[in-house]
Image 1 (cartoon, rainbow, N blue to C red):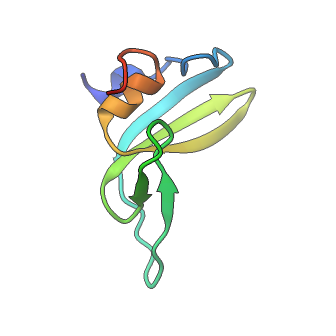
Image 2: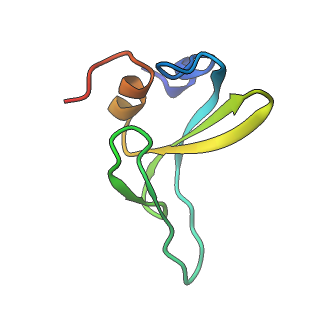
Amino acid sequence: MPLSEYTGQSPLGNEDATVVRVVPHRLWQPGQTRTEACTNCGEELVLSEEHLLVVLEERGTRTRRYFSEESCIRAWLGEEKQE
């Protein structure tokens, strides 16, 4: 599915939040290694390596969520079961 098709959907159990944008992402910061956990599966992501970024809006506030792969986004949205 094209990543743009996730726009407008809400995460499972949080209908107050809406996906604004989903894009492939790399965060390059010279001399720094930033990590974040995948929002769905908890896998540690090195943000300078390719991952997926979801911009989520909830009650007028936008936040960034990081995902290791598209199947994690689908599971987070309740579209498929996580293995």
